[in-house]
Length: 126
Image 1: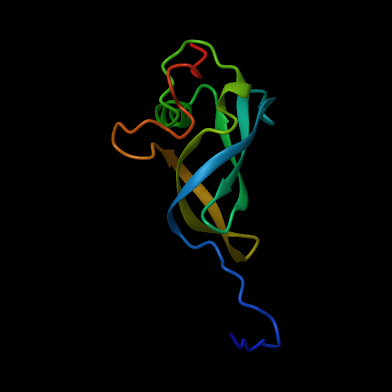
Image 2: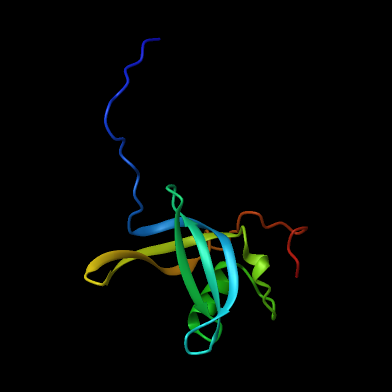
């Protein structure tokens, strides 16, 4: 089979606004500037595997949304339990320092009542 090579730069896929599959690759318990307990999540988002950060203050509505997205109903959090879990990330644009930046607005489940990837009865620690 004969092939033709193309010269020049190849187009790189870019992450766009909308809902994308996301996987948590790091989860760290930390403290906000105001001294509130929070989780700092590093996620791989979309098919382009863009790394994005999402911060969840423990005493906030975002924590409830996050725990719902993780199908978590326990009473104590171990940040290690969330690494490798999948969810959906709603990506929006927000103006920051005069330019449009992508950011995660909210995390949701992978589907209505659908278990998350990697979840099975043997792997759930609670």
